[in-house]
Amino acid sequence: MNSMNDYKNKAIILHAEVYGWLYRALDEMVKAEWHNDELFKVWLGRAEFLVRQSKKLHAACENDYSKR
Image (cartoon, rainbow, N blue to C red; front, side):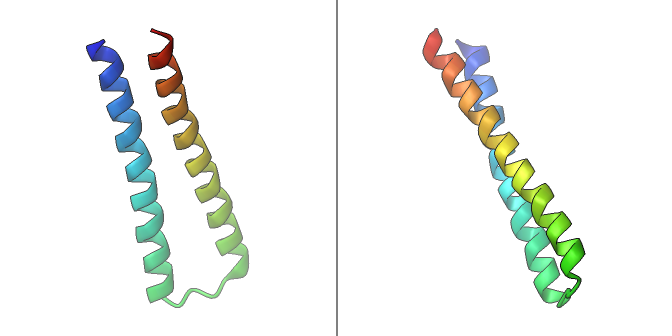
């Protein structure tokens, strides 16, 4: 059971890190008054991908934990 808690904690930490990274990156873009729409679209696509992946990892840990 300890190892499952470790995985769940790692998933939660990863999820928080992803959101923290996204917030910091967006904050830097706003401060720099970045106006390149194409680069912003690419960044936004990657950001959405990271959020989806971290949510999947978190859900997988919760599902695996509930099966035990």
